[in-house]
Image 1 (tube, rainbow, N blue to C red):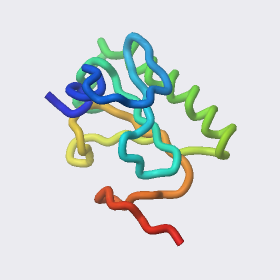
Image 2 (tube, helix red, strand yellow):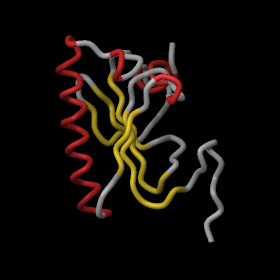
Image 3 (cartoon, helix red, strand yellow):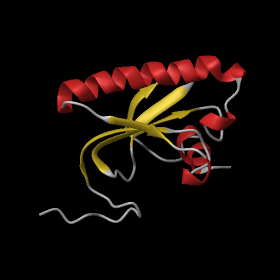
Length: 117
């Protein structure tokens, strides 16, 4: 079982949810790398976008809808944002997830806090 299935989807870790539907959960990153950092995960286990199937079309559409809403909010509040997902060796957790983030970077690639001036 992966980290998202075990901790987020099963509710074993208390997170600050920003959206939840029958298909997805969007929450504030538990260890943010950016000032404003949200993670969107499907409740169904899919390893990555590359492993999604035609049967997942409604789920992918739901993710895009929530990303659209959050991107609009980020643009209104902070002027814009980055939206990303990873596949294969670029994934730290083998569960489809999307990041939406904005602001200053507060952690390096290894997760260490960056000392800001």
